[in-house]
Length: 422
Image (cartoon, rainbow, N blue to C red; front, side, top):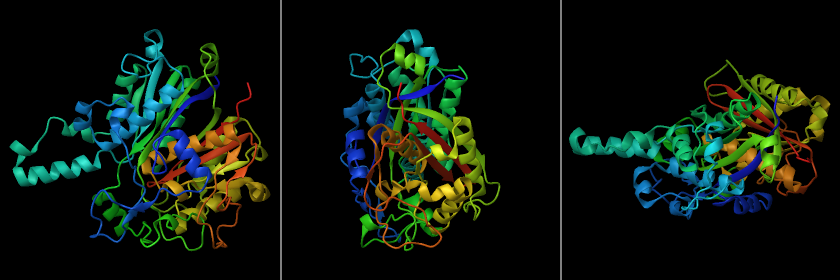
């Protein structure tokens, strides 16, 4: 099987609208969570979230006409993809978009993860249909704004990607699945280059009311930046966020031939199902265990080679305890020597984009030798007794990092990245 490397990354998060800003915030423990300002949250119990702020789509190759015809999740995907392709060093066209050369376009594809699709558009469309009726309340653009696969669809059009093109929709595992499936296609020879990642824009009334009714969201409205506190004993739910993460994967041979800058190597992917419960993982994280073991086995490394885990770490009571139990089952006595952190403590939970954003943070941790912290870790929980890199980043030169993503429906994915040394 062919070796697969990361040659470009792009981020749009509550912590910043590019890679450098987001990474700087995360390693310095700055939260992007605040009171939601885009709409009135007074009718629900949770008033906080991780909003993308100061976003100007036209800075990322989106035209004014396209802005009117796209849902936010699509524009978020385009912004992250624009950054990743440019970062990967592909040639720019007259509009400043990085495009793959036509000669290799059929071996360049795009798989993107989206958990819920055009939620804002669905809500607006329903309102128009109820108030104006079907003759005046419809729009020829509504369907394109709603469907999730228009994220990779638009990305392929912007960057000339004529290879495999589809969306993965698997709740909070969507972004990680997109990266993993892209990895497998490159390894198998079905593509040489893949633009992959995840995008989500669900910081809207309907999803927040729904998650709130499930008692899944934090209600720490008086201290927004303290609300997301993975593995802390006083955690009271996750904080919803929005954004996108994109990475360019390609064969090592192709990357070297074009002189690309290599950020990290992707060496393992695991994907499993709990077959247990719609929302709650097994107490011992049995499905997560198998996902991590599968990724490590494919990477061809020993358990002791894994030094850092970017945890799913949602800041919910059951999930954090289950993931901790799973890590301890997989790594045994070696679990105590792992560095485990949840960057959701700063970004919030980006749902379909979470796995992609966290995979990028994992790759950057390898490249830069810095492990992001878990902020707001103040009160140890006996059920969560690992080293969660509390509150302060650590400078550590590591060789392998594992990124976990788990979602409703009992879906699990794990990715193993390796520091690239030639």
